[in-house]
Image (tube, rainbow, N blue to C red):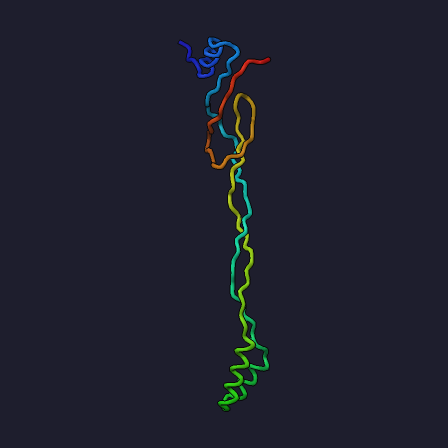
Length: 132
């Protein structure tokens, strides 16, 4: 006995129900290729940036190491020149936003975009309707 395919059964049901009714069913199509679609996302990153005091403040501190009062004044001067601030920058990162999938069904090659990698085969909706 010949093996009856799903399409033959549906075609038979289609003719029994009349030509006015469309038939829809799900089948599987072999996947030819899958390419990840990359998307660049930007996230804010905050870091602390400090300015260094000028060199004259450091040199004076080294020379005046034995003079206590001068050291205190120099330390205050150095602390006033040593200022920090927060800087926010945008950091780029790549993420997969979907997959470009090429598959073959009914002798035709089609490409679609999916949110997941379907693997070696993927489900497809098939609709049969009469030609007008």
